[in-house]
Image 1: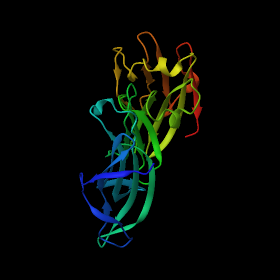
Image 2: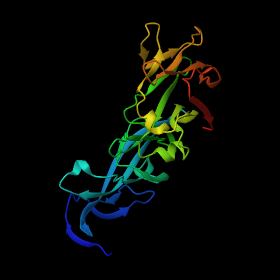
Image 3: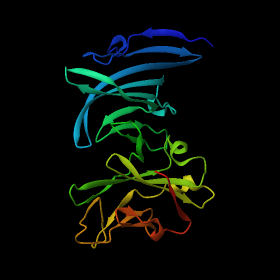
Image 4: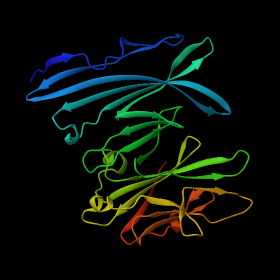
Length: 291
């Protein structure tokens, strides 16, 4: 059925076609919104455009880049916006290095993926909103290449550790837990796969571990798992960060308390989580995946 445009003019930010050339000092981009009718339903189709500065270190050299983001959304206009269905948008990202001149360099990386929001942290974070009982998903991308470093559930905190040395090395552990809109992309089609544990450091994926649960309704059951995780301390509490001093060997254990009496425990040995020495609750298994 052909769409009939009802109105144009909502949140118009820019009206230029996207233009950018290597060696240029100016970039423009599309932004705007239209209201369209499909059958008895009305939808807002919106395009927004953002430009943000970011920096990263590569081989000891600091690079300043422009992160260009385009967000495409299709949202149903209803009397109760809170009761809407899954309306995940699309994100297109482009990285350009800023060169002397000043001028924008050639495109260093570009990528398009599902998403509803773009944020800059140590990398580029693309947030995908969940529907109904789903959690949101946060995909962390490398600033240099836009490759995926990890995906985590929005409500699950990051766990970090530092290995002392010259230079010191920073690591983080991200946990993804079903259900979010990214379940199939992260966990695959096996209904028993319920979580992913990823270790990231120095702009690269170091480890990935798929967590599975033996249950008739594994993903529904795993939705009840706790988000309490961290490093096991002598006090019994879990801490978000720990420091590893090679001169003073310790035995830190990454612990995820999935329930009141159940925990996934992974010792940290030689800067890696030791899956062979893992302590797992009944019915839970770990599978090591390639980084």
